[in-house]
Image (cartoon, rainbow, N blue to C red; front, side, top):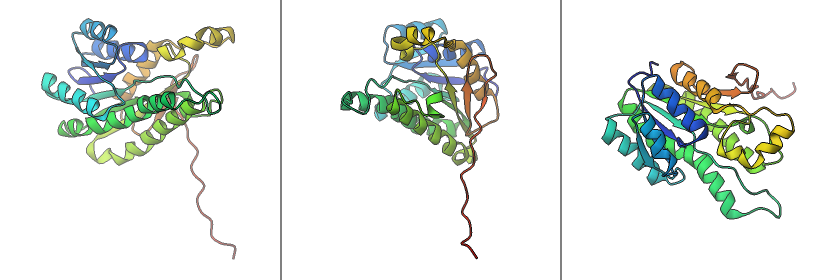
Length: 249
């Protein structure tokens, strides 16, 4: 897909991976809309690329629909969607479990992708197709014992993408996921120093954005591309589900 001239919507676009993606898309000639709850940084990012800012709570279905409607009113169509908004969980499964924190994490990290995809589909279909990239995580590809809830919602995003890719092929809508390790974002701020102390390299947000742009430009669909320091980004190779066997005899 040629990005120049396309209209793109990026959720969580005020900082981190979302901001880096906004900049990368704009450099390739896209007209970019920034959807975020940060009414301070969001407008600044949008202004930097001559785009538009839309205050959006992605955990609210109607807010997602309104964001897409605003894009259509302002730009006349929608071609690319980066469903990137995400938050840390803030609770475990034991005594530290807190329902409000759990609901917020699931609402942003999972509902935000489901609602965003649902809201964007009519607009993408009306253009004859388009591309969607969801930000998942390595936690969507393997278990993260220190945050089971985050692992759960990111696994759900990965499953959604793998199913939606073939499901939407007839509409010429491609759906993929980017699954970075520990990348520069607000999510890692509380644990950033601890990660560095353990010798872990923090991935620049711009590196993740390069993979996002590559997924927009490519022909793949239903794939989940990991991003790790020191190696090229590639689609994760899922093993096939074991098939049934005939009864003995």
